[in-house]
Image (cartoon, rainbow, N blue to C red):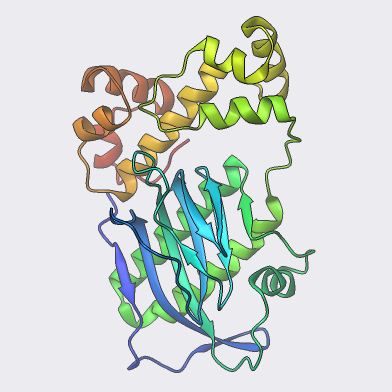
Length: 288
């Protein structure tokens, strides 16, 4: 299990690394951050935020509430008003985060324009949902950066500059799946909190078609039935919770709505070929 959770850059470190035409200066780095309960207000800083959701939630950006399903990357620019406390306390979200400055930028570019300058691609949007393969790769990059810093804190600037460039290179790989309003409504239901009971009649009502018709259309679009997609999201969440939180398999089973830990172990073994305990014993490196 990943033990490293939080890092704040000290002023004792070197003054920054050159990244293209800017001096990159990391500020903070989090793994598995869960916003504290309670009401917060939007606030802003003069730093960039790169937030990678490993468990879905919602957040506020410049006065607008936005959903953030798992695999979502949120790019905040200096001066953006934001609040990462979810509107729904039962759906709090969990994310990894990197904050940094461009120390010598007189007028810092917006984060999407910064990404474009770094990866040579057209500017991305401020909220991007990665394809599964790209999200798994980004999770590994966060984990690798944490391991480097845990082993040698003097390597923090190098590790986090590398993380930024690795992340930016993946942002052009946004999930290319075309969305239809009908299936998008169903997908959002399927990605709601894992312990929420979702029935076939609920999905059919959201799509305004029969459940049988919905299953055929959903499988054509995603290659899975709605039930299989829901279970895949559930197990993806379980894997990330095992890797990046300190919850036990029993606690995770209860949080994800399994009847008991034995049912959770059976589902986890079916998805990943090992039990949660063996997954942790092996270092929790991969979710494939």
